[in-house]
Amino acid sequence: MVIEVVRPEATYFLPKGLPQHKIDQFTAHGTEPDLLPLLETILTRSTGDVITAGVFVGGLLPTLCRLATRVWAWDCVPEHVECAHKMTQTNGLRNCTVQLAALGDRVEAVTVTTGCTGQPSLAGESCIVEDGVPVNDLLDLKGYELDTFEVQQTTIDSNEYRDLALIQLDLEGYELPALVGAKRTIEQHLPAIIVEDRPALCHSLLTSWGYSFQGIRSGDRIYIHRSKLDK
Image (cartoon, rainbow, N blue to C red; front, side):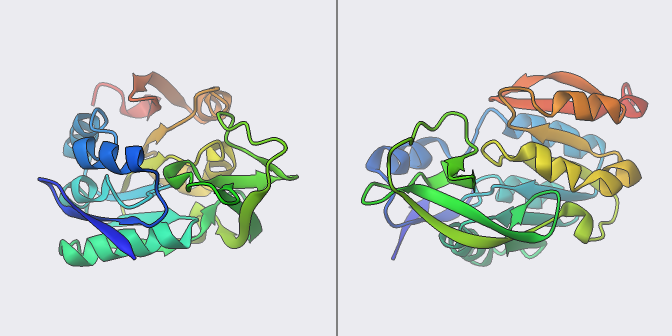
């Protein structure tokens, strides 16, 4: 069972088990509305493929599919992937591939939590679990029984891309391993990079790869390679 939400830009499908306030918030505002103008700016200046991960139900996909040549999308929760895939089909977004997998620095099975047993889903805050602890630093679930499952993890470098323009990651604390697993791709294409990285764990790595920090928009940190500044 899914909940259909019709917004001006697209029709979406939300998974069952979401708390009502998250349904109301998505219905009213969609996904990160303050980020959309930035995506427009980046992809108008540099067209090509886009990688987006942690897509939840695909709130950014209509904008990305309109601006990109091809969109490579991932989420690690099966229900999210089903909703995002149904959204792309319903809205005719044919240049998007939605895949079920976690993104990290190696190919292996990893553990994911969608929240506490018997409680509403964490929805877009679902995350990887390491040593029994969620990697999302905003979650305080110590002492609670977690709903968990295993999912296959892959790397960005496991695929080939054409003229990659942007990598956008919202992985609830797992952005750094995903970037490590994208080193070859990033060195080849030098895409713009947007990461939800509140503790700035990715900053040192990205600056060592020649990237310049450009500021924060909607909680996301923006990086452009120094060779592409002022172009």
